[in-house]
Length: 379
Image 1 (tube, rainbow, N blue to C red):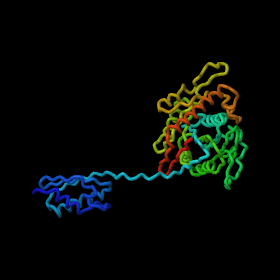
Image 2: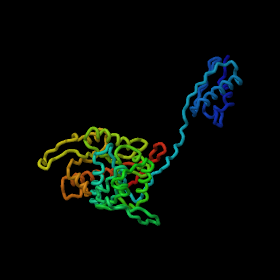
Image 3: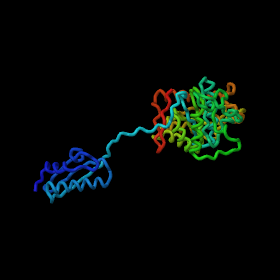
Image 4: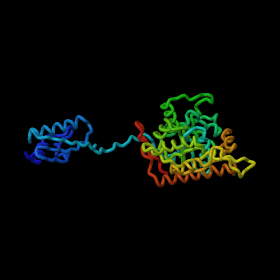
């Protein structure tokens, strides 16, 4: 028996796919009909992967053809699923743009003990020496060190009224405005907080503080890649991130993870570059000799491997440690090799920030489960 294709199509026009208003032919679900004697092949495309919808469509096609065309027809129904392109919902932007802050720089490290806080404090005072308005948020909730490094352990933020609201006034030292959880705890008091409590404290120091106009807000993040990092990137429009590492392989492995965290598609915070701290040791009696205690140029090689700018190297010098311990960052010293090293490093950071703001769009919203991102503040 010869079956007419037009009769089959007419039969299929009497049924619809579940959830769609139009019949199968008009909706485009039926893509092709082929007949071979009493054999019929119907090719269909559905927009839903649900098994029960596909099964129902197959049964309806066979029933319509058997009842309206030929009851003994041998029918094959091929169903392909192509999910409809739905308009992507706009992510909820939880990061609040702060017009008074032109650039917000996260300073991170894959592991502890690489001198991240030391580099952050010296970077901050060097920026201030260059004439920028600088703030430093010590976000290392469990090991705050900014109060010690800026010699403000005994200081406490004052309460000021801004636009009718009471806010914390950051403590200022060496031209840098500083806020740290260390201001609110005793020296021997351990901060034993879960993630939400830590995030709430950080949000208060960010949004309930009278930071004023800032060219740069530096955020000294805790070591690793954890909850605090995500909370910060959820709350603030991060302009870019700087990774601090020593040349040691163990530190470099963690630094690579730190870079990967910021470069995740769901986070997408530009990495401004890598800083190599404790790059080499030069004894005073041998000023031209370099001893590579932790390895040679490891961070520089890593930056080349992962195509991230190398921002500079800081030598392992006793006076840097001593300066941090007494609360006067080493970059404040009179003209010295250490001062020049931090100045070169800071200039490279500024250049990368300018390049990032000129070449890249604002950071997109973070899309991590329930976490939304924030747009970066363009300089």
